[in-house]
Length: 150
Image (cartoon, rainbow, N blue to C red; front, side, top):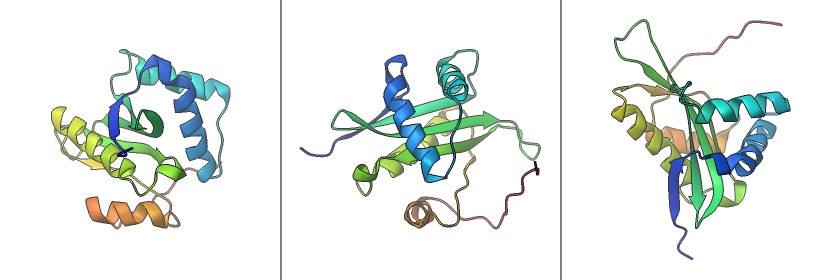
């Protein structure tokens, strides 16, 4: 096979594969979420009532191997919205084949089409494999994330 990568919007029939991929993503970061979060998030990603929450699936020769979640939101320093790429994951056996790059580039195109020129994301400092890709297709910023305690 030729390793054909297809990127497409999340569809209702993707729930099992989406859950498998997102569960593996969360496990990589040492966390889990409840079934209620899986169900609510999947419903929101497909709902016309939540147009700012979006998801794409990556298929490699027809098999689901990656996902990306992205969210549009207002920004006080801009007129237009910005796009937060919240979750990005490629199955380990599909890495190095361009899945992550194609998912990010698809988010870039979606953001451009929505009139949203800024796309940003965060990753853990130890995520060296992903950071090699990010260093090629994005600009590292000096910001450090803080989060409310408790």
